[in-house]
Length: 113
Length: 107
Image (cartoon, rainbow over all chains, first blue to last red; front, side, top):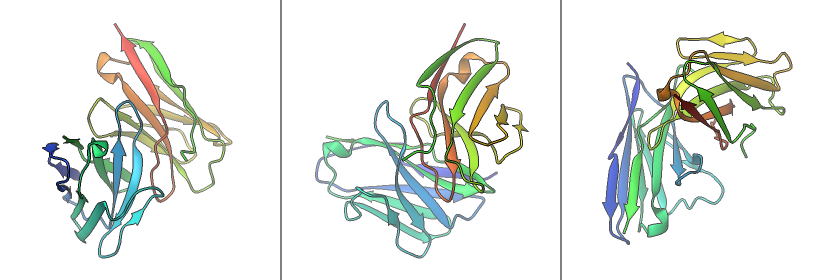
């Protein structure tokens, strides 16, 4: 069945490096994908809307040059955290709409040392 | 800028019905009410959604008031595995989460 697959599930990196997170729609095509960030004991915060073949739409306060989103195909969107810093440590989750239901990936726990 | 209001936390006894309320007084006519839940460090899980009629599936029931300004999610027989944060969301093109209700099911 339709699933949103997200990788990696966990990543630890050094400060200043870049990290790429992949989000794939399995058994369906996703014109639009959403990226969220969640800090401990807080709710999910919408970061950006990823549109296949066009530029992503970022929420207010989210730096587009720091969080690069590429949605090059109908089944893959990537989020790259550039020059990561400890304050970027968070749980990142992607999602896509399938038949009126928003399916979520399992999330990526990013830890920046 | 979530458009919903939910209690911060609730407790429920195992085997009893859990009734989770949600206020969405500014909902507009074409916006759906969605419910998701999130267990620690996992992606949110879809539960149910509705527009104006009550809905039921294998997980839960959704009761929406006639004026659509509030709704209640009902878990008919709560189990310990239903302990999670439950989010009520008004959906219109994108999905923004409020703080949700932390439901604790106790033995």
